[in-house]
Image (cartoon, rainbow, N blue to C red; front, side):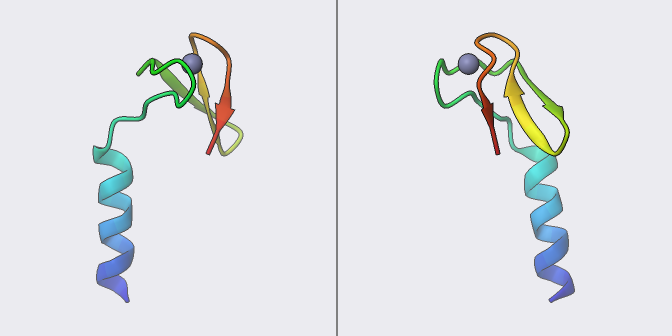
Amino acid sequence: MAAQKSLQSVAREGSKLKCPDCGSEDVGFSDHQHFCKKCGLVFD
Ligand SMILES: [Zn+2]
């Protein structure tokens, strides 16, 4: 169980997010949500 949890946090830190709409990697994080700095799309 603990291993699963640490795996998850590693994946979260290591993966580069991409906007599903415009494909931009310029993604910010605010209020527990990710948002695209380019087009403004908010996603998880
Ligand atoms: Zn976008």
